[in-house]
Image (cartoon, rainbow, N blue to C red; front, side, top):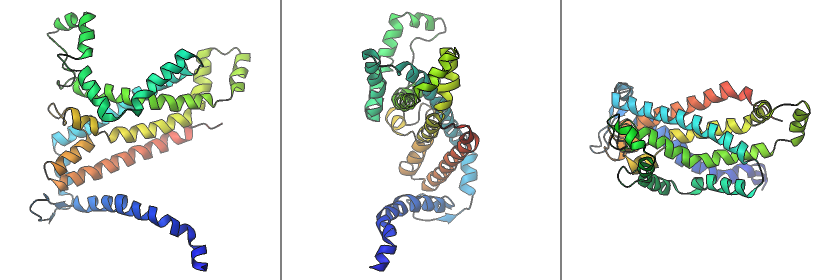
Length: 299
């Protein structure tokens, strides 16, 4: 009984600790282990090669392109979604029927499944029957494009526009969540601060940049970490729409890891990619905390 009382917290934590050990710590450690071997998972033969697979992948132009695609997607997603969410939240920070309906419309894509969102946008961006090309045709944009030798926009089929199209889909999916977080942060700012600024005859723009943005820094910092991490882990849209094509232009790290390990059975290369992705996310998160955490202002 005395042992149970003194170690009760540890006993209650054991199921959670066991789950973390089995489903998180062990897979990570095993991925590190496999990354130092040459193993195709079919022959069953493992050959220790040290950092040989790392050198091979980091010298492979296709893998470097996957990393570049992922980094470009991440930077674009974070910059566009956070900036748009900030201005949308400022506009929605009013109580009226129009603003409430707009808030619901903006947040709805976030609660819709990713597969449904992807299928919707595959129709919207279809070059033959898609809504986007239809609207562009009615607006006369297609005649402008014809001057540059472009007959129709191949949004998801062209190497030049495919990654941009994925960014548009990602922004549409995540914008509502970011807006709701920032809107909640704005509504928690005490009104007395704005009243004091009004007495000093501060303009609306000055109050936004000098009061709203600094006091929203905890929410902005949180969204930065969340969006960076989630952008690096993009998988469903790539797997459903393009499988990484055309010509590897939309392939991203998580999809490449899955494809390499479970379609091509190069489990060693897949493990190397997993380790590198873990290091990239860890470095990005550390850099954000190191550079920006001291700039966060709390009330």
